[in-house]
Image (cartoon, rainbow, N blue to C red; front, top):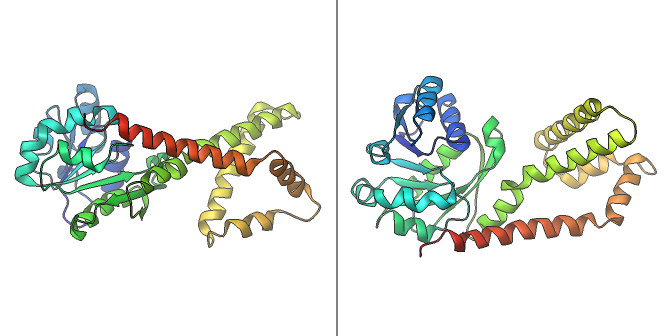
Length: 275
């Protein structure tokens, strides 16, 4: 791997996912230090991954060339602001995965000259099957972007977006997206029970269908229209179901859902920005 000395501020689910992904790709555990306030979490991280952890974030970032901000959006300012002087000296890449916290705020809380990159991963990163949207301002060097991309590729695919506003759409589409598919599978299983299946059978059928459809989409050329058409025989059961979905306005429902999530992402930017 390209040289990485990594500090992860926050030992929660996404921080743990990144640690596991990077270790699988060959990064040595001694090159990772986690800033985590909870002693029990620090002990667990050391036991399960062999990484160093510290209660003091200043200690965690001391030798880092990439600092991953993996705390809740409302906690980002409290975590970053005390580190500004130290980051001004060492100039690590600040890679934030906190939803909604804008680059302008991150730069204010870090220090002048610290390269800031925002990432929006999604929950499948926990099993190495995530996808992350990355945004870097034009003044961020390509070498710094490459470090951030390397970190996020450890848990799945990476796509670059050209504007920070586009990350709100990434949040709505892929960041929140797994919940949409889970909700659909949940409803499918419920209706299977209503039509006579046992709850366990209906649940297994829905989950396996969700999993298999994802594999089909991912393993092919990604032509979603063609994939749908191949399942839909003229005059058959699938065609009847799709007609019912269209008649119920599924296209409008999905459009309103994605827009609502994107709007909320923009609202979060205002809530968690600098005062």
